[in-house]
Image (cartoon, rainbow, N blue to C red):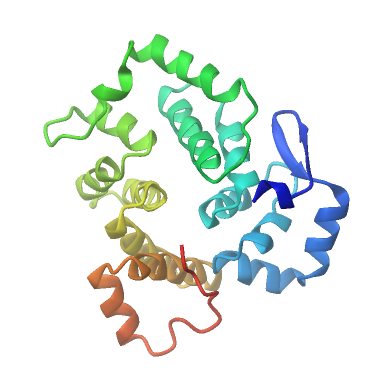
Length: 232
């Protein structure tokens, strides 16, 4: 919980105090921190988030770190695109759900921007339905709708980059199918860090009893070696 974390505000980003960061860093070696972070460890991911390194900030946010979930929102909050602002709002809401006290202006400011661009009561417009226009489907997914992201993943299976993008967003949004499919996409890269991260997502899906993920893990005798005990 946030009460157990010593942190400070700066440029909109929340950061651990130097003492807290040093304590976390001393508990891991560089290689073990990377491995643990990719396998889902929250503390390990946080110590790799130096500056505004978006790769590790996003990994930490996916792992459920309150601070870096908030910081992911900050990193996206000044973009010009509506979809980027929608995703920023998603991360701020997620940080709030995790128990972080959000800087007061962040959520209202983004809600106002989206309301000006999309109209009053825009959220209702983006409730998923099968006949949604593509542009609305994308905004819905960026706002956090799991089914919209899953639909976009299905629509873009022939496009490698878009398939990867929407699988990850769907996984972040909570789609069990996307968690599993994104995990497979990562493992197909045959690069050890991606394989570790892919296993993390497959396990997240399996923990929620997604049948394909459970079958995959049962068929892979060594797939869970070195993984943290994920119970979210």
